[in-house]
Image (tube, rainbow, N blue to C red):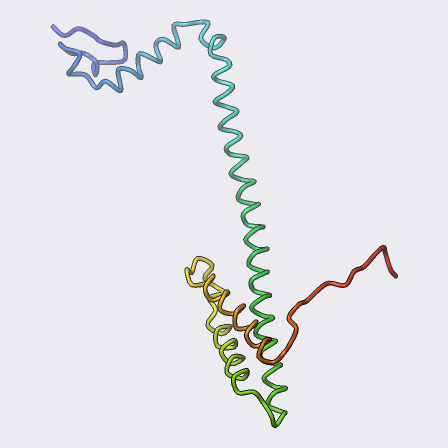
Length: 166
């Protein structure tokens, strides 16, 4: 005759313990112990509060992290986009000015054209592109190179403003 191992149903009737699904047995035993122990909620209140607090904190943290990550992504994307736009505008306007002059430095023209081609091929819509940092570094180095070739001082400093002026 089969003897019951737990109180749930015929599922746990067996002649030997090894024939029973042990995960179901442990789960049923745990539920039985919780229901039988009237002081369970009192003795485990700290653990229960800790688990609830952890779950709520994780949920709030994920939401705040998502908002913060989105904000940071927008800021970094805008900074990279404006930098690429600056290099593109700089190269285009300088090329137009150099076409008007009879004595142009051909090396500087080639460097400016290279800046424009890198700007056109820049992966602005693919933030996960592994070439993005190398292309940005290439743009920066070409900008420094053309500034050196033409004798342009590339230091852009903000003017010192003290106090409020109207």
